[in-house]
Image 1 (cartoon, rainbow, N blue to C red):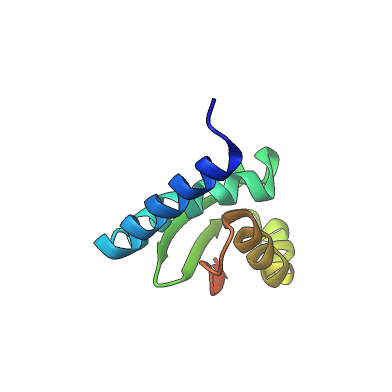
Image 2 (cartoon, one colour):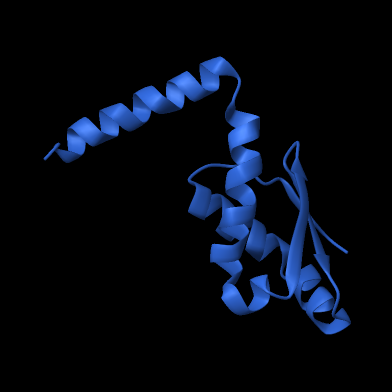
Length: 97
């Protein structure tokens, strides 16, 4: 079984390869919607739809006006939670529609 230090080194190598290859934006485009579901929880994720993530801007569609208002008021909190979950500053802005 690999040690934690070995796993951290492998993770660092993979992160450098991803950055060097220019694949980080594509990886983020996959990871951010998954993170949204985890961060907001299953119930709320079921009432929202991540429409797009590009250039640090996450666009989320909410049909219900009450939930739309709630999420709009909590945008900054959600942005910080997403970035904490992702381990770095990925989401600059959340647009709720």
